[in-house]
Length: 154
Length: 157
Image 1: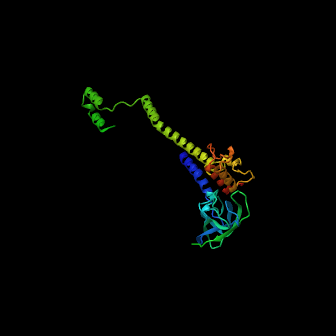
Image 2: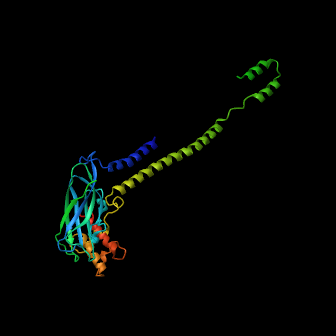
Image 3: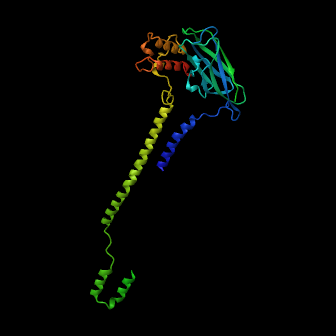
């Protein structure tokens, strides 16, 4: 009898915390709905300055998205995948940054990154995109213009 | 009284006493076990049977206590916000001390990593505190650590 009680208590002690950690379905989360994948392309216009480093933040203001992947940019200087926090994957917010110490750098408008998203539900997400910093080869920051373009969803 | 006893009793008038005594001696059941011997045997049997049962009970208690202790330790590790196991990417002491702020402007961004990378490439002066991973060298690994500190989602939280 004692052994059964101990066994029951131990089982409860293990199962209860695990159950408590399972996130309950929030009201925001659709029980059912359309799921599609779409890329968003991020462009930065550095004007006449060579772009050597950038950092920006993207998040969904409305709608439900999950970030599923990050790609580098179009110019060889930023072709490699940029820096981002892996915790941003399957999240709706990400900070992305990259730099290049070389001399072959893009000018003007250039695609700096592509972010692949999973969009949940029928609502079109609205994004908030903020340029944190853009800098020239000397590390001097300048006010670049950052633009988001939605790609074709699948 | 058994059938044999009755038969011998029936013969009591016709069988000589001596033969009757001999026959009784041959076929009579042995005498009863003395209570002292009986008690000793019983005690020994109890002792022998009790040993494994006590062991099983002790083992069950030990297993229960060990399981409870394991649950408490696991819970303490999993639910302690300071635990590095729950959040393996938890901030390293070097980053917590603000050593990733290479340009010392009060915030950590990609320009800190950029400046450190340029210092390394041009073999410019480097400060010992920029050895963020503490491996005795200031190299690309430290640059990566600064860059990752810049893009962390929970920084400043």
